[in-house]
Image 1 (cartoon, rainbow, N blue to C red):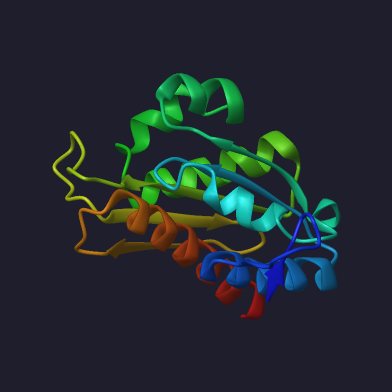
Image 2: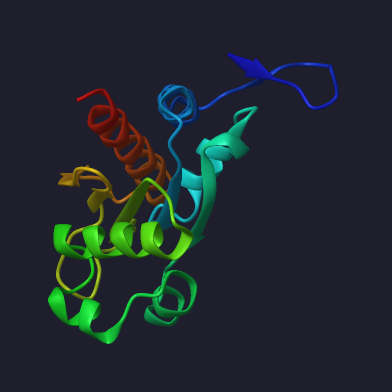
Length: 172
């Protein structure tokens, strides 16, 4: 799979974008929509879903919610939501997923929170720690640990893991 904006040399498509293609196909075929609230993936999950032609049929919106202010302002996370669990937990990932889904009125919400690196976060999680939550007709959450301090590698790994988790939920 490759793309070219100018019709000249093709640009290789990253793996996480190729994984997003399957998620987009499933959402489109099911007539369902998604909203994304991501933190340590920095917008890569949304970007991957949007990189596909026809994304407007399933992608309603997304936000990089890197701070409490962003979580509250952009996806409507409340103080009560924040009191449920600290960031970088599966509970918090589900809070983000539910909030994004509710705010944008979608079938599915995807939330991601973690520590991209090169150091860990203030909660003691090592770089490479990420929690992903999917909220919709069913809910699921996972934690991944890459064991890497490479920020970019972690961000792309987080995006790929989130998209693979979405595919698993949609195919279940």
